[in-house]
Image (cartoon, helix red, strand yellow):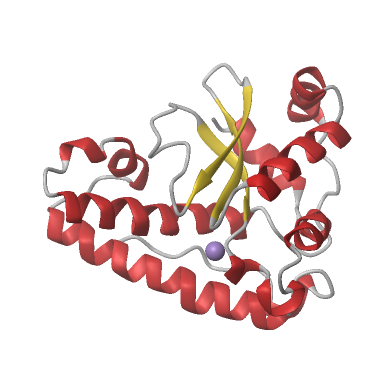
Length: 203
Ligand code: MN3
């Protein structure tokens, strides 16, 4: 059974940047549904015992195309939201330090430029999707965007996501309406960079 990531903070803990109703709906409805459906489709595909990463990186082995799409969409929804909610938090670390900070500076020139680049990807993603910061086994960093619930694993990049921004309208519409740029800007106020560093160091 795949377990939904449990929020270690209250729905209203990210106010005033991300509102309580959005957090409650996003976690208890959207993410919970992806988790339930993913478990159902994993069972249907006989893939119990595999990790979500294993399933998403070998979808081509699932011959039934409807089942393959269902595993991609719901497995992605499950995985992507686990990462998203786990890099957020109240009173988090405002900027990375140590190895991750060094690599960000080396790759993107500065933390500010990194934020500008990933924000541009979040804004230019047409329709529902995500912006990603991923790393390979050597610790090199990559920025990307994806549609729907695709992610760098299901897209076969071989990179491990360590940070993401959800740009589905359900992530921001209740508070920001059509203003995705305002949401992305405010989102950085609730990122806990200690969590991202942890993922980078445990690649
Ligand atoms: Mn979402």
